[in-house]
Structures are given as structure tokens and as C-alpha cells.
Image 1 (cartoon, rainbow, N blue to C red):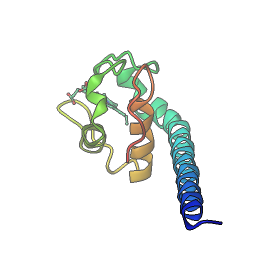
Image 2 (cartoon, rainbow, N blue to C red):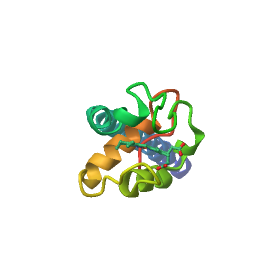
Image 3 (cartoon, rainbow, N blue to C red):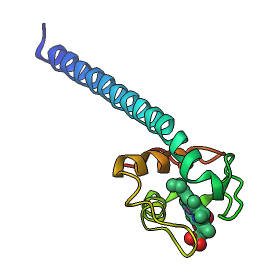
Length: 118
Ligand code: HEC
């Protein structure tokens, strides 16, 4: 086998391996996000729906449907942790992981498609 062919095969194998690696990473992220959303829904229904409604349309709190502000994960997590003028903060009643789950749930429900909280 010529050196050239060997190099070529090696490069092909490396490319293939990194493709498989990428697919595995994105699969893991999808699975992670699905798990966060599943965990987030009951947390939302219990703690948030009283003000934002089960379907996110809002009531005492603003509507979360197609809400572009939810694109900013840092903002969403801060809002849930610290609260706002009228919204209570949840830092003492929810764990960091629960806040991550409920944030991912609202960021990926009701036509919001902003991915998981990193
Ligand atoms: C007592 C009512 C109340 C509860 C309970 C509540 N919120 Fe809110 N929420 C509000 C209000 C009111 C605002 C507007 C900002 C402010 O005045 O605090 C708000 C703002 C927000 C925002 C920012 C939306 C925007 O467009 O600015 C997000 C995201 C949010 N809430 C998510 C949640 C989540 C998730 C929960 C549950 C963990 C929750 N809220 C619980 C009342 C509430």
C-alpha cells in the first residue's frame, strides 16, 4: 500500500470517527434535554402555573408563549432564582437542578425552542 493511500485512509477514518463522536454528543444532549423537560413540567405545574397558567398564556405573570426573552438562559434562571417585583424567588424552595429543569421546560414549550439550560 502506498504511503499516500495509507494517509488518505487514516484521514477518512479520523473524519468518520469524529462524525460518530458528534452524533453521540448531540444524542446525549437531546436525551438530557428530554429528561430536563420531563422533570420540569410537574415543577412548573406546581410552582408557576398559578401565575403563568398551565398552558403558559399568563395571568398574574406575563405570557410565556413565543416569548423571545426566554432565549436568554441566564435571564430565565435569574428570574426563577431571584424573582422579580411580583414574582417570588425560588432559590430556597427549588434545588439548582430543579431550577435548571423548569427553566428548560419553559424555554422549550409553547413555541419556544431555545434548547437546554447549559
Ligand atoms: C406569584 C405569581 C408568580 C409565580 C408563582 C411565578 N411567576 Fe414568573 N412572573 C410573575 C410576574 C408578575 C412576572 C413579571 C416580572 C415581575 O414582576 O416579577 C414574572 C416573570 C417571569 C418570567 C420573565 C418573563 C418575561 O417576559 O419577562 C419568567 C421566565 C417566569 N416568570 C417564569 C416563572 C417560573 C418558571 C415560575 C415557577 C418556578 C414562575 N415564573 C412563578 C409572576 C409569577
